[in-house]
Length: 161
Image (tube, rainbow, N blue to C red; front, side, top):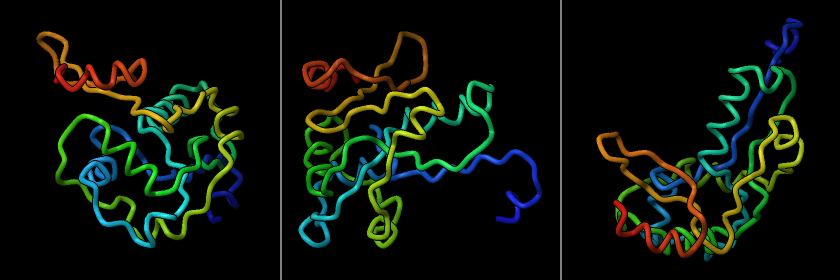
């Protein structure tokens, strides 16, 4: 509130839980942890790549530094559904952590992704039904993360790493 009161252009982003192949939350969910309340809590996480694109578009001027946006995906899923999707994705089955913490996740309410998506020109990555990422290592380069073409590519990617 103090920043907005100064009259300068202000951009406020409230991020939903971030999910991606290497995010702490995704790794935790992939390990099939015990879920509070049977995993009934509804969340609409945002794909890590969409969050990164949001910040890049703000920094490079493709989106203005004005407004308050909830950065969240279109898919509203129970924590149990999200856990099942993560468990089907390739990668380590141990580690990770609740990020944000479970008590913070409990406080999150499903957000409207439309205003953020329109302002930043982003089509939120769909999470329901399949994993959307895999790790690839181009010859001679560091590992990078990119979106997959869907379930078949996701299954094939288990051998790509």
